[in-house]
Length: 63
Image (cartoon, rainbow, N blue to C red; front, side, top):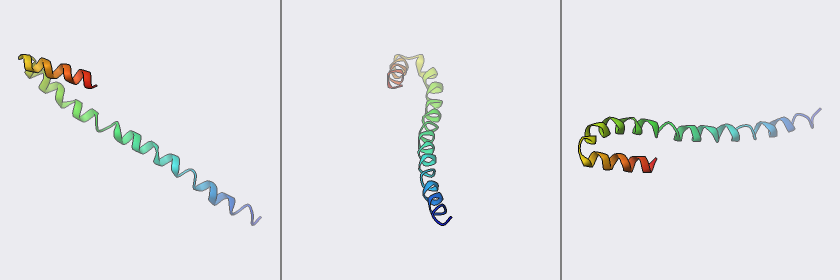
């Protein structure tokens, strides 16, 4: 019975690692969306001039 108690703690350690990995990935994804939202609005205004079109092309290439 004593030997069975020590093993459980070891298994509890591994689980924490996986949970930590997922959060970082999701945290990175959220940041990009907000920045992209504003650009579209500004791109529409400049679109009238050639400069606007150039910016839009650059953004498309970047993404």
